[in-house]
Length: 303
Image 1 (spheres, rainbow, N blue to C red):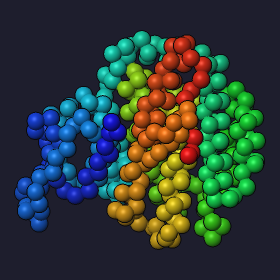
Image 2 (cartoon, rainbow, N blue to C red; image 1 turned 60 degrees about the horizontal axis):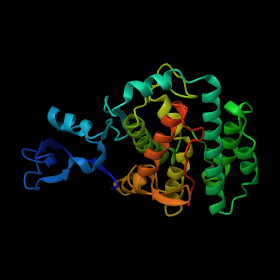
Image 3 (cartoon, helix red, strand yellow; image 1 turned 90 degrees about the horizontal axis):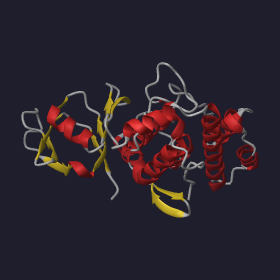
Image 4 (cartoon, one colour; image 1 turned 30 degrees about the horizontal axis):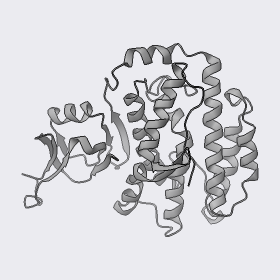
């Protein structure tokens, strides 16, 4: 069963009743007549808390985390600012922590090589969907060496971002850059939550990366593993700007489209599955690589 991604955009009181998430508007000015909304906790994969006037019970937090839901908090500008995850997501967690911590540098370099190859391959496929020449990216994907010693990821990114959006946008990828960077940032935050949740569920530490190593980043491994999934977000953003150039504001319409990313179809081992399920399989394959049971990471391709 595909888990749901739920976004709470208005002032609300969130609590738990009979193992259901209850969204109540009782006592909230102008919304007193709005009926309660409920959702089974076991159905929730990601809960996005967007409004600054949301209250949430500790019991509800505990029940969500016990069911391995990821909670994403947003700042005053409605952009994701934090994430809360389960600390005990797998029955053999200590064994997998140890295998992850003791992973050799050659293994981590091989895993990063596979990650970069998969990312560039998906970037090439997305460009191809828009009849944008992508032979250069295909070559970069095929020639990635262990640890990406030649920095093919950066070379591919330079070409990719220069060509993904129409020339009139004069796009430059930067987190605090001009639109549609705002759409990309929101989509990547949802994707990051999906990946971090899957890593915890597979008994891995999302903090210890195979490539990313920033001392200030609590989700280095999530940032590693999400790389081949980024083009799925890029595809949604490209489809949005093909319909409108007015993307300065992250409207509810845009958010609805980006919040559907966990349910978007991906190809994994020649089978179509929702992205959220594919991420779980990727995380499980990574755990097996750390344990020495496999050598190949499972990554999806764009349909």
